[in-house]
Length: 316
Image 1 (tube, rainbow, N blue to C red):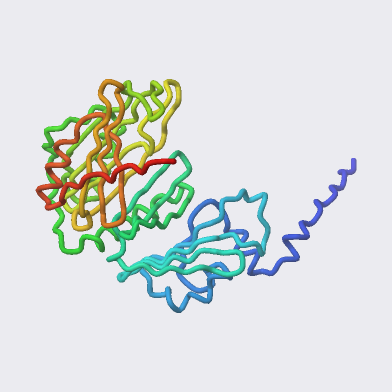
Image 2 (image 1 turned 90 degrees about the vertical axis):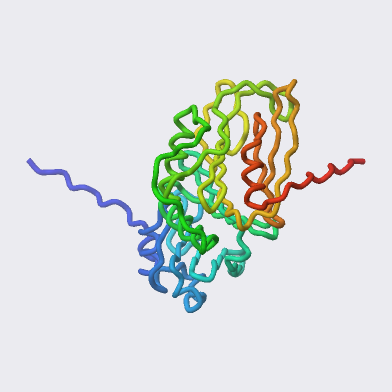
């Protein structure tokens, strides 16, 4: 018997007609963040900046949000490059015709916010002028931003000694597993004990800003020695049958905090109060169902003054 000859598959002309350099970048493309160690690792449109960023401690390239089946060799597969070094950060972003560049010294940074929801991640530098620099990523590369966060934290609080490792003797209990795990992570990354200042569990009956009955998503605020760390789910409420997988961690060193303001809620409606942290022009609002007495007392002990919230503007 004779075996049937197989017809060879059609050649992917768009792949084999591309340059070897474009094919190499395409072959390495995926949802993960790329580490840059030499000029050739940079996407072609960012390579002119290599002499200025080559000495940075970390140089990362962030891929565009696209499925592999929708991209081709020679396309712009990376739309942001982050260069983090001893003196600050350089942010390169792709524009329609060129690349935009922004230089940031550590004196201009107020803190860091990291938000994750399953495979979606958003890492944000909070700037003292009120602006933000955000980078979205797939959480398969979350370890890169964890390393960056620890490095930047040391730059924002360079002269503050880390507390010694020891048991957490906080009088405030953490009632649910999600926030206990978050506290354990902060304690590990802070190099010591993270004291609980305020803890609200998940799943309490409440009202949202449209007076609809909802369940709360909780709040945890920690003293991490050199900084205040606030952890929540990104939004204060969820629907009765709506799952919540999100987590947000906001880190602000005490030396960057310039004030705070408390706006009471409406207890009869189970509405949220708001504690807003200020770092010059940057504002970090925290929604809470309980009066955050220990947080405010702790901030006052650190010399952070209480401010009145700005009066709401009238609408015509």
